[in-house]
Image (tube, rainbow, N blue to C red; front, side, top):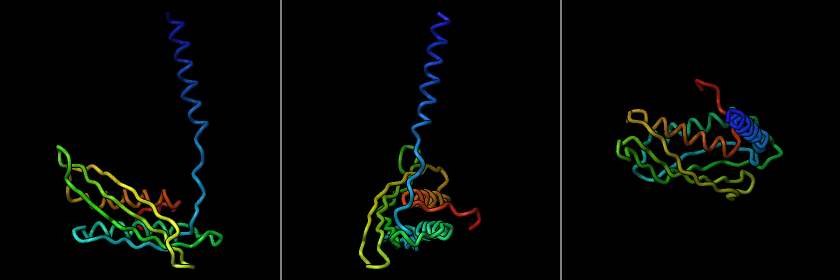
Length: 151
């Protein structure tokens, strides 16, 4: 019986290692993002919009620009924000639509939508947590660099 367990453990270890070989590097950027603006309808906290805008533009500033890619400007529209959801009132969600507008032609050449969920029992930091989560998703989607701390 102990030999069977050793063989089973060895098979599981080999299976786990094979998962790492299938990881691909992140895709190259498709657009050269030059600027972003964050907008919303009524009822969305200005602190959330400002914090999100600052984080996205800091990521754009930290990213080296490639002139061979189409230059775009992002319009980030915060469609819906719901705070203090769930049994413990600690779940917060946001729905975001993003338009990438060509700098050359002025037409929208790409769109993206995303939803974020953060958890925090402390209501004083919810806007900052949501802003960072939204900015992180946009950094990932548009291959932007994470800015250094303090910027």
